[in-house]
Length: 415
Ligand SMILES: *Cc1c(COP(=O)(O)O)cnc(C)c1O
Image (tube, rainbow, N blue to C red; front, side, top):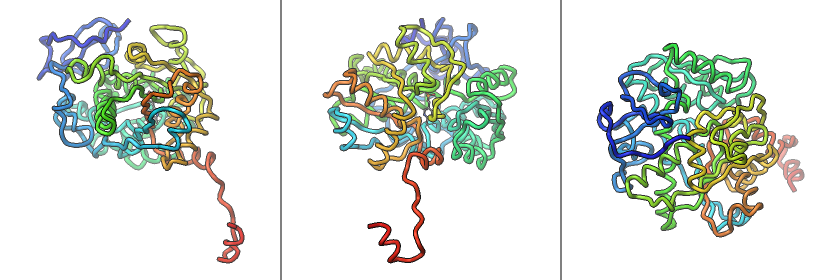
């Protein structure tokens, strides 16, 4: 079982108070001496710090507001973060919780939270002196990497599962100049290949296996806690989020642990982490339901929510303890319910891609089951923008109506 305790001991390998630590063995590594994604025993790495800042240390806007909690003073920036925490009064009363807020990560520069990871991850690539970047992707990682790689002037390769990536995402990767390599396989197959290329030293891997990416993504947690507290005078009880590789789940948990270490948050105040997967790709839900410490890979995965069409969530060893320690759970929802939730959000003026809507669909299900109480303050994370997947939006929305080229006829048709 992973040890996610933040220790106060600063190892000799630390550079400016920053090091990498294996979550399985506690082995520590210098952060920028050589390229490393996992430990000697293939355990996941976390970025650790000599000091963890409290809320007082944060200033400015966006991801780099939290520079004191990040490995660099600044990054390759578009800029990213500072996304809205929407009120949704109608959806809130429909779901039946004390308060419901939507943290819309689709409002990042390339339309998903992946930008938060890339602003830090591509900076790490610079620091390490690499020239070529690579990722496997269900789409959004490739869009973000293409944009941030372009901004940093680096060569970018993206491996995508052929025919399973939404149109908007391919368009972004393409225009930002990434080489798009389509694999006859699913996301997990693409990641296997990318890991091999990275191990051979052929390119720098920027999937969420890369611990620097999760550093950027943990700022979602800081933003939610700060903004919610500012508005309501308390922290939210629960954060509900879609789960693919479980990078965000791990990153949010890390944000909470660091604030606890800083004395800025009480352990009992950590929001309950609640993961949502699609019925057709739910290995994390299976692990939670069976009380297992690791996930078993699903080789056949299918869902309309292509961003979470993942059968082997690499960050499970970091995320499962987070769900458990915060008293959370994981739940699977059908594609039908995901589309319903996408429509509900749209009716409240919030346009998201299908995977994003899984959070709201999961909340609805857990509220109905009584797992979520009526007196809870809940934040749902919506991870990507509606325009990412125009085909899904068109399928879920109203059909265009042909009308004659004449004002009276148009009016006749409308009434
Ligand atoms: C990447 C992504 C996810 C999955 O996030 P993980 O951190 O891998 O669990 C969910 N939704 C969208 C839109 C994404 O792009």
